[in-house]
Amino acid sequence: STCVRVGSTTDDAEERASGAMSLNSSDLELIFDANDQTVGMRFVGLNIPQGATIVSATLQFTVDEAANINPCILMIYGEAHDNPVAFTQSNGNITSRLRTTASVDWSPPDWLVVGEAGPSQMTPDLTSILQEIVDRPGFTTGSAVVLILDGVGQRVAESFDGSSESGPELCVSYEAPMGARADNPDLPVNLQREKSADEPQVVQSVGPLSVHPNPARDRLTVTFSSEKDAAALSEIRNVGGQKVFGEQWQVQKGANSFLLEGLDLPSGIYFLRVWTEDSLQTTKFTINR
Image (tube, rainbow, N blue to C red; front, top):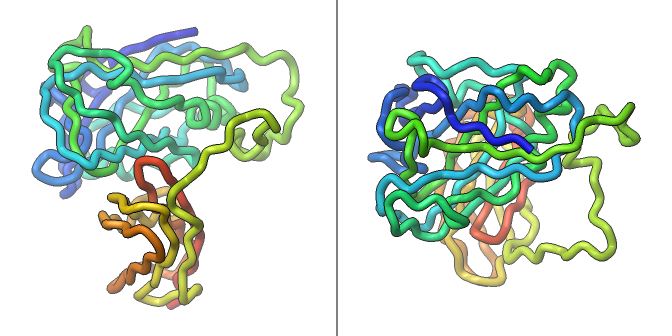
């Protein structure tokens, strides 16, 4: 196992909706700070060998302010890079980075005690993200790892510049590789693994997404069912992982239909993702102009 905290001013950053970068803030707003923003964290010195089997991985935050905006739905990604560099003041320096296919959603409870760093401030397991990164052919024991967060709502965590001893900490447990992998090395690990018969199945309140027309031009209708009323976040990403659309929805129990208009997107393949606190659904569609 290995645990590493953010270790310098340029290893955690916030990117405003305008693309402007902040590298020396005393805290990290997850995610709302006047507008929704994107947060990046870089971890150096994990010393995980390429091809290791990730057993568990979590990101631990420390509360900087007891300021909570709900619903708070966070999406966590890794940077799809063999050895990502530190953040800079260049406009869009977080959102321009290619993201992992794997992602994890997190709806943290309210953070009520300043200085607390416990289960409520710890992410769900990030194994799928870390596995995709260490399986990259160019990853080495000296590689850094970058995690990227976006979403809606607000929790406020310590940054490196606020407290170098209480900044974000990534802990990873792994098994060193023993010879060649038995599975298909060309597939992301989160697509290789199948649930065992005795593994609990996750029940999602939101059903599969249907989109039409597909191919679309500048408007798209999204339909799905839900077992309950819920706040939801929708986003569209291109094949490079860049977010090109995002909107918060209020989902109703039963049938739901949302019309996305004015989609000024170039021709290509896109992925629509809709998630609530207990559900995540994704579908693919095409823009044909």
